[in-house]
Length: 338
Length: 259
Image 1 (cartoon, one colour):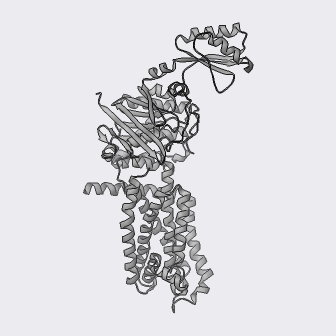
Image 2 (image 1 turned 90 degrees about the vertical axis):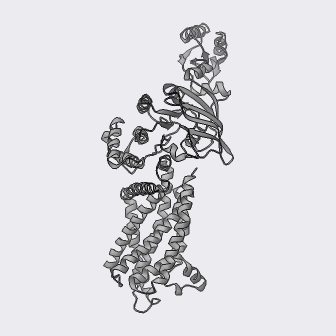
Image 3 (image 1 turned 30 degrees about the vertical axis):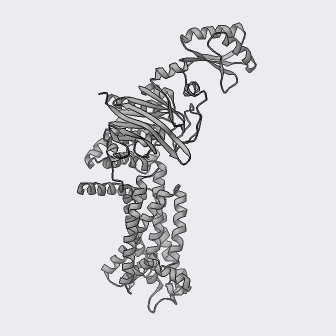
């Protein structure tokens, strides 16, 4: 209906001398998906915890469906569910017992809680494992159970904090599929992620957050355009050709190639018509007799967005509770604890 | 208001059922928390029984003297596990989920302490059985026997609220465990649990005599094998009421404001 699900203004949160959130403004329209994109330590989790009433902001105000997260916290809790970065399930209960317990705590009666538990186990492909202790579950199963625990009462607002970090591609796709289904059913989603691709797949709008500030906001396409669309990457067969390769590629007129962490790799922006660009790059390299072991187009990564937006690579600054391993583009960065 | 209370009770019940399941599903915990008190009963009565029996009042056997004391000792030791269990929950993120849900704020804490109370009662009954096998007898009648166990359980319940607070402020289960150990060990030994207080040096007597642990052991003992009941009993009730009045609100407040 175009009404506002989440409205946050000037949220500041400090932990001791660390400023985890430094004046975050955020608006999420009802029925849409907002992606909060940033590296570890950027403040994503802290922001979600403020909105989910788990942390009091030091400054600023936030509301969910018009209810203030501090003064009307218990009303907000009736409207939200949170699936955290680390699966918050009870490992010593079975999947079914977990759902039944959370269902009862969501104030469903016994029978209703049991029925919803069965439905959700079925829907999340956990029916066969429903009577096994959750500690025997794989990472993907835990995450699905965690997500199922959030859906017992079909809350209108769902916070997903890095729902796929550490998951294999198949489990990740399952989570994405579930998220899309929820949105079709009308749930409003606020999703945090380190992966541009995930934000791109799921979110209508993306807010890029770094060092506790929103540094850019827009649709996925807008963000990618700001990086320059696609990139060409070249891997040289011989590292000593690097200088000559840079020279040849610069002559294509697409700016200076950026050396990456590996000395023999180069990337350069390919703003339009990537295929034509790759043809010209291949031609230029062959003319100069530079041997190449790999050459192709790739989409911008979070690192590229960061490089463009901040002039510096994405770094973990250790702010707040979401300290973790860098680099942000590495899928194994934050493994689920056993 | 009444509806609110009913929900709080139900939430507390749901969480206690969960915590009791935990207990049953951790065989090593179940084994340890039952074998350890049994070992204490056997070791103390056979190892120290001979040496201590001379200091006991006329006609009192050490087994009869010891058993009510061991109830208090094992209850006090187990209260530290309240802190450890809560701290583990917080580490695993389950507490975050509870806190984001529209459930009673006190239910997670009440559910933990109530489940621990059930465990305490179970372990005391188990120790009574072992005690009976080696010659201990309640001598004052069935009503007094039950009252003796309940006094210890009530004290244990109050203690576990103190350890809820420890669990909420400790940085991780290991810290919670060592904090609990440091506090409980001297309290348990500087009391009338194992020996009559009048055998201690006078400075220690003055500490032991005001200790709630001594009051609880004395009350439980008087109810089990005879003696002055009311003087220690009202002290225990005062301590239990005082501890609960201070720590329940303190813990709920701290829980609300967890970072």
